[in-house]
Structure formats: C-alpha cells, structure tokens
Image (cartoon, rainbow, N blue to C red; front, side):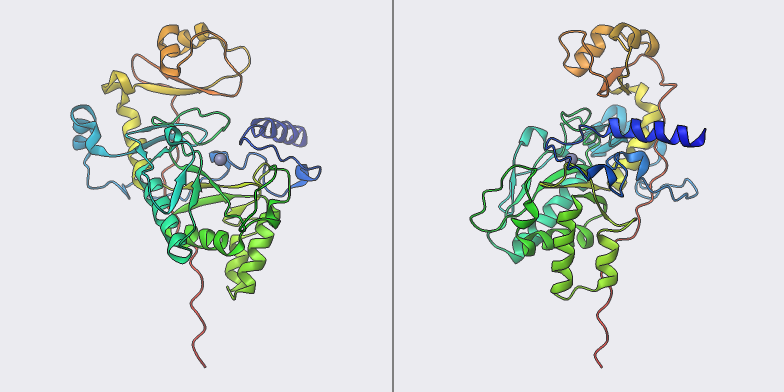
Length: 352
Ligand SMILES: [Zn+2]
C-alpha cells in the first residue's frame, strides 16, 4: 500500500517536472538520478526550521504600518514575494538593470525580488572583477508580477533565474543535448559558483551532474578544500543539485528574506486591495473557467483578464491567477522562512 502510494507520488512528481525548462536533455540514464525529478519544486526544498513566529526580516514594519502602507503607498514597501516558486507571484518587482558585467537575454522577463536583483548584480560583478571580458548571461528571471512563465514550472515568485554558462573562447555551443561540460570555461564558471555560494543567499543551484563533475574537479585542482567542495557538489544534500534538462544552464534559486516575509505577512490582508486580491490555482484535468469562477467566487471575465486569456482553453499543469471577491479561505502560506548560514569555505590552515 505504502509502496503503491510512493510509486504514484513519484510518477506524478515526474509528470510535474516534465517541462521545467526549455532545453530537453533526458539522457537514457536520466531517470536514475539521485535528486528528485521535481527538484525545482519548492515543497521538496524549502528549509522548514521552525522559529517562534517572530519577524526576522521585516520587524521594522508594525502590522499596523504594513496594513496602512499596503493600501496607501504600496510602492514604499518594496518587492514582495508571494506563495512559492512554482505557484506564486510578485508585487513591486524589480527589473534587472543594464550593466557591463552581464547580458540580459529577455528584459521583459527579467523581473525579480530586490534581493534577487541585488544578488545577481553582486555575483556578476565578482566574475567580471576577475575576468574583465566576462559577461554573465542572464536568461529568464520572471514576469513583472511573477506568476506563470512558459516553459517553466517555477520562476513565479521572483527568486529563480537561469544563467548561461561561460564558454571557452571560440566555442559556439551545440545543442543542449551535447556535452556542454567539455565546452565550458572552468575558471569563469567556478568563479560564478563560488560567488553565488559566498556572496549571495542561494537556496540551491540546479545543473547536470556532468557539469558539476568538471567544476568540482577544477575547484580541487586549484586548491579548494575537499570538505567544502564536497558540500557543494554531487552529494545527497549539496547546494548544487542535479536536474534533467540542466546541461546548458544553471538554474539558481535565491532566498529573498524580506520579500518573502512581507509576502507572507500581506497574504491575509490582500482583500484590502481589490487589484491584489488574487490567489494562485494550478489547473487540473476537468477544470474550466466557469467551474473555477464558481469555486473561488470570481468571474470568467476576471480570470481571463488576469491571465491574458482570450478564450476558455486551459492547459493542465499551468497556474492561473484568480482574482477573488472577499477573503481567501484556501490560500496556504509557506512556512516561516529562516535563511540558513552561507556555506563559506573553511579558513586556511594556520601557517606552520
Ligand atoms: Zn529555470
């Protein structure tokens, strides 16, 4: 019974993970990987260390002040990340600015929390400081208001970003199925990973284990401590995790402490602003706009408008923003967030 349940769960997670990212890379051995197929799913990766429920990242704002400003002056609150990465949205998103240390592939979909944008700026400049010609290739972060962004499941709450690899001089990378790990510039990519780990609050990095292997070997070869490298790569509970279809980019999820905490705090008061009184629904088989409108006390027209839908066809698995009238009675809150300490490299041995 338990086994049957597990199989069902695994299968459904696998289905869920099918279109996580654009580039198909399902090698024959991919199904045997160590990391769950739904590795981009928040539910499997959010740290759940409990604390006393006190505010950790937005204690400067009393509830009263927050409620008032949410109605009167929402922009003053800065970015807020609501829900989870695969069913979430973003209020007061920040767009990745132009900069000489990076290239933005799709500016319209390069919106994130302030923490995400700050972290990207920092790590891109770190690499650029070591390699003057290095420009970090920033692909999708998210939409201005977050939410569903094809072809991803995640990238919804302003905390995910896809980063292109740095390649060796003269390499014109082939298809995502090819052995990109042989074409990448190890020094630049390692410097990027190092900066992500040391200079940013990263929840995880997803990349194919073959890419991890060459980066770990490189790090050891240039003298990084093995115990540290082992905590980053190729293990059961490492910061960098294997995922299918991630042989041509790093998928990075950042923590956004203040934005996430504020997002959780405003969720119960969304009803005070009609334009923000929205819940997220993942479409399942049998859903129709009419049914959803009834279920959530919304209307077909409101749902269409909120999601840019012209017709009534719904694709199973995508999420929809559902504007509602009245308080949300079925909006789960993510657990309180406690950002773990960064995985800093060990101190060098004292000189003997
Ligand atoms: Zn991604």
